[in-house]
Image (cartoon, rainbow, N blue to C red; front, side):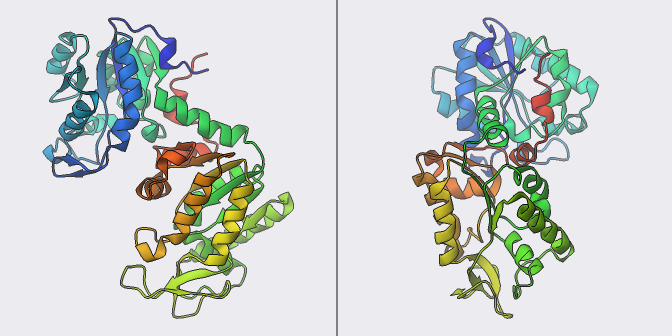
Length: 395
């Protein structure tokens, strides 16, 4: 069982909230504040409940203290979003006497943002002494960083047993509820759409979802490995040669389970994966020897749209093509549009590139849920219990 933030009593208590402020920066400017915005409901709830709020996050992959990866821009953006009612203070570290003093002096309504956790190598090593130091700052631990829940780090797992009370935040609750519904109790017909580059990245997701879905739609570069495994010409398309036998096994397993695997029946192709490439459509599944597949074709888009239109649950992870280049973005856009227009379905985007594409194309608020965790949502869909979620469980 997991308790949520609303189940706790917080008045006057030091509330340590693990957030995911791992945001893209240009110099000192946050270029995409989605993750900060997603954390706002939990931060505001803790403040409303009278808690003394301490926020902790990592940013990037520093090898030690690095001013370029300071959380200062994220703290500054948070201050803008919270407004003048709440002062946001940035600590110059995440442990040590200075931080303890700042926590002790926190006034009602103030928010203390600890400096980048990964400035200390002990964070990723899940070092017990470091975890105890973090825990000493708190009476209550709240994890709202789903994007890091698949990592057993000091701030996501190691410190939790050393804090008196623990709970999931509102974003974590939403992630667990929507992704949990897809994995455990999806309303039928249930469609999964998988894209991206590699079969190897999605193999465990396919194995876990195959017995549950009514149809699995496969696009992106991973589709060419499946097509080649069926003996279809794929030209210069990206193929995982060492995964051809695995692709065959998956296709055979789907046949046994009477689950439909829907592969592209036509393609948008070019000479190279860039905006300098030409753009052609193939009449059928075969790709000419001088070309590579870079998006799903119009017949495939129509087929995928029909499946999505008839579904009651749709989960999508991985773009349908090279969506970063406009001329190869149409397949990804059509899938997003079909999901957005199926108001009768629960539509879940599994983080990563597909989440980025959906937000970039303006469909984010038209989905039931867009996950904030790429790797974490993939592992959740694989059926793995994530360390950051397991740490919150009570007997």
